[in-house]
Length: 162
Image (cartoon, rainbow, N blue to C red; front, side):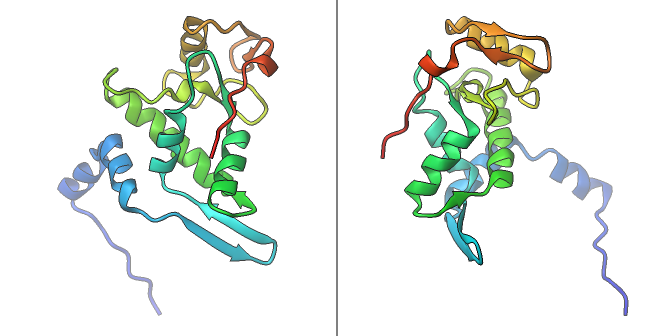
């Protein structure tokens, strides 16, 4: 038995590589959120557009962690949890799409911290760019590159509302 492998021409491969982040984000608007049932409970698998809408509600001066966002979205979609892998992929797509818009209708992804409260070095420009944006909004950032954290984070959390 042999496995069929799809080979793409150079032109097809180049076209796929040029897919814009905003095109991918807009395409996710038509994807229906899913709640999968497993032996350990229910898990929400959400399109990036859901994260984009939620991040846009975070006001200047406040932040959330990815875990807080996941807990809110799980409750919203009546699931026990929200898939962490999908969340990470969606956050990266939202961040890159926002950067691709060059300041037009930005999504303030820099206000979403890693689950441990640290800055995310995987965002566009790394944690140094996130640090600069947070400091511009009045936050005090401490630590070294690769391990930046907000000073006094507990007074800066945003709470999502249903």
